[in-house]
Length: 511
Image 1 (cartoon, rainbow, N blue to C red):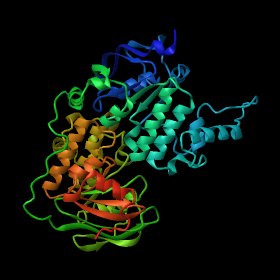
Image 2 (cartoon, helix red, strand yellow):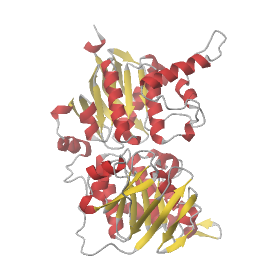
Image 3 (tube, helix red, strand yellow):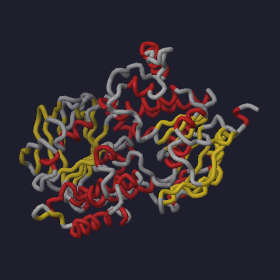
Image 4 (cartoon, rainbow, N blue to C red):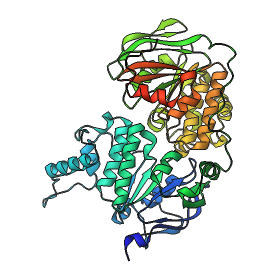
């Protein structure tokens, strides 16, 4: 019997609970060997729990898995690896203080007869492996902490493939990738499939599911809803299965403008940093969403962190309400007279304290508001946080539950609620829907629109160009550290954004 003639995965009535929370509830599904199978669902639907169960990080309370026809006791990652299962996680497992080479080899570095690592041979082997994946430009001796998020994700994927898996689990691998990097992953998936590798692919982007996958399974509230060939379902049907209802339209309607934008609240003139930002000038007005587009590493991150006081501005000037300001730290940015807040790229490490409750996370920037003589008025603090949590539609249990216990979408809601509590006038949103399911995305879009209609202003960077097209009132495009084009709403379309992002409009400069 060949490997392709059996099922790669048979999940049989699998259940996993964490206290009173049932993450996976009596789930059964099958995946044919040699196929690319999408696992779909909202954040918190049970997808990541299934991946952790298959990876040996968790054990099911009841039920079982058969892997390539054999009953599997996935009691540890090593047991999972022994069966040919490898995982590339969205929340990456790379150790930030190790080098790329050390991260790829850990914990299976080749050793000689004396137990010493064969470093030269290992380095040559990893370098050759990276070259086959088109990653030869990555410095194996660079520490992981110094790398961009997209590069870290590529290394996570490369490490899983380096171990020659029979079953490859890709947990939202494109949430940190854009454009050509997503195309790169598509080529890698096709190549591994051609070798006979079975792939589980988790993504919230239906286009990727159609481009990369043969079949799919949908989970909702920890339960299996449906499985079948991708071609058997249209997008509306998939969305309805994922969220349990039909979403009439992906993006909220823009309000009909009967007047020009409000007064200018934030202006940048010729900003530059020691990083990748060379020359950036823009203005942001009350009541508008200004989109920011650009390929990975074109200076957009420097632009956002410099406006928030996290990167030194080496040239240029920021203005708030038409007056020059010096923002030397995030504490300066969130002051009431400035009122700028940032929702950063990585919510788990940069936006939240995962071991603290939702209340503690939300109140940290304004804790002095609830303090007197060094004591915190806990009742007042919780009531204020409860009010903003109601606005962002997050469950009351977030008030006392640690942030790390929530799905990515709910964590992002907590990160946004924090700045609503601080009454920020300007929100800097850096790829805020990364790794978030379609239903929660729709809720965040609505929150953005409500925020600007109430008089706020948003600077929005997104790796998903349709978000900029449908949410922004106008957009600026960065190329090699410079703003090369400003696009008015009438011309705001994917073609114009991509053209400028690829550098074809380098002669055009924003006014």
